[in-house]
Length: 124
Image (tube, rainbow, N blue to C red):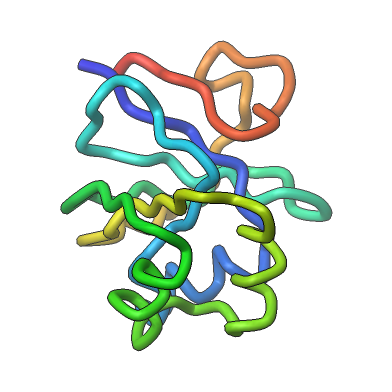
């Protein structure tokens, strides 16, 4: 079974772990359907800190997606609009139960030598 490893900025990782960010926005989704996302917290932490269940995959115009998800977005409307500026479609993973790792993991634990720009599939 495959999962995704996503690179996410620390400010958003914190909100996912706290439960206030229930959607992870992307300009494109992975082609393969996955049920788990591993969260790689980018610099300065550079560790895999948790996994989260994927409840759903959403696709809509940026405006429609914001209206559906804004109450649990974990991001300001301004940053959301800037991220999707010029995009006809916006995408999001709807996040479920989070498992915070007691001991954070290195990329090498998953056979990776560098962090993905966006995401990478991993075998679980």
